[in-house]
Image (cartoon, one colour):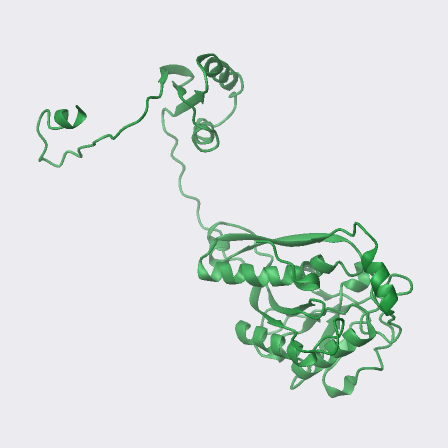
Length: 361
């Protein structure tokens, strides 16, 4: 599914993938975003609006912020239902506890976000996750470094996460490290938080310095990550929110949770290797069939007979000229006919000699 909601594209894609997995539309999803800046239009237009950083650096939520710094990027994550991942023996890096998407709605311009809409999408994601705002320790914000956008976002975070908590919410943005990767920005934030879970560290935002004076930080308990922090274990798994906002359009917020501690690995089922494994070979002509058979027999030393047989059945096209090998010896060869119906009688006691002869005729 191709998704283009501008700067929130990859996080919206994650939200859609989670919904598809929950509803059974798929069992595995690849979610990603990519931005390649093949022309200078974004630089030109934002320079005209005065929204471009003077040196290309995103100073997210900082007093010295003077605009966005564009960059290119690509990121992909694999998403699976937790129960399936455990059953399949896949390593779980983090859990998507909840997510939400909404429309920015009315605002005073294309580049002006809507604060109440951001508050609503955050509350919806928390409700979907079933956790309280105080149970989320870190937020990976959108934080592009624009004066208006960062201020509105910080105020929305203060109103939602910043209330009724003992410890301040820690706020940062990966855009300070690598710029604004636009369609890939959301997945970049997700990957950053997964690594933060694993290292037990809340990374600092570069160039943070003094927090922006355009934000009333006293309105709630939110603290800018101007320095790296240890992310201590608590009575619940580490949790983080990730925000991504499309340019005056689609908002997305995701609640990530530290991966559960893996239980003991289940005992492997005993492997039973059949004494003889058939190897079916097919080709478009008799000569090609001989070549295929010769190539197969010349490259099977040390290979599992079962693996070779499986691959021949499941990963090769089926053509009309066919043969079957048993133990490296050809036991059957022929050309497939037009096909037909085969009747199989199971032998439950009601059959009689010749009962299928009329059907076969």
